Length: 224
Image 1 (cartoon, one colour):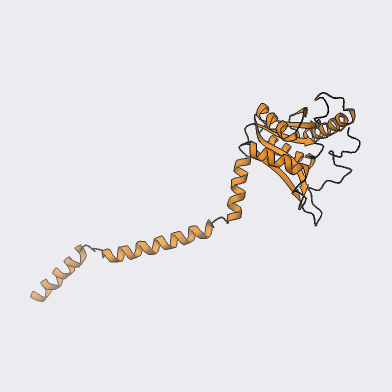
Image 2 (image 1 turned 90 degrees about the vertical axis):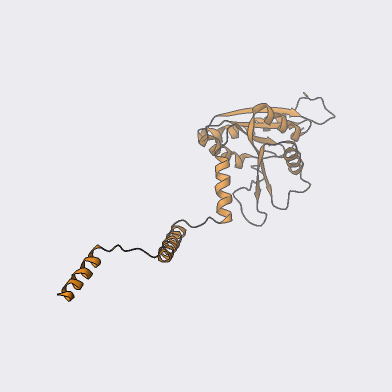
């Protein structure tokens, strides 16, 4: 009888007992679950490389164009290739492209001197820019500006137009130093807080940014 009561008491104790987990075991389990979860997240969301981060940042900044895009032409600056890029960027953000042609008038001549050949080339450049904008479906304004120096004209135009981006032509790699375009670039980039976009084409290989002399709207032949 005593043995029967002992077995019954053990059975009741086993049936009604509460299982109390070990705190150390809980901690180990949580660590394992966390490690597995973080590993899965890392596998599904790999970290961006430095180049990818730079591209992401550039894309974000380009998508925040709030003002006009100023595209510069002159006897030394051919921005026709970059004009297509500027037009696409402006269209995406519903911005307006402003194409200017700067006529540098020598100090030996009056600022309003008659320069018919230069004006014809300026009109040709601006007409080409209008055609690019038309094909891209973006609004464009054109201006012909006379000044003693291209750099000062660009700075003034950017301020007057409220430009958020200045596009200044292309040049061949290794052909930057001492070139007329280089002087204008240096002046503009050191006298404005507006972003400046410049194309650089390779000197050793065919480049999409290359512009042949016959296509160059900045050809000076018979300019004055």
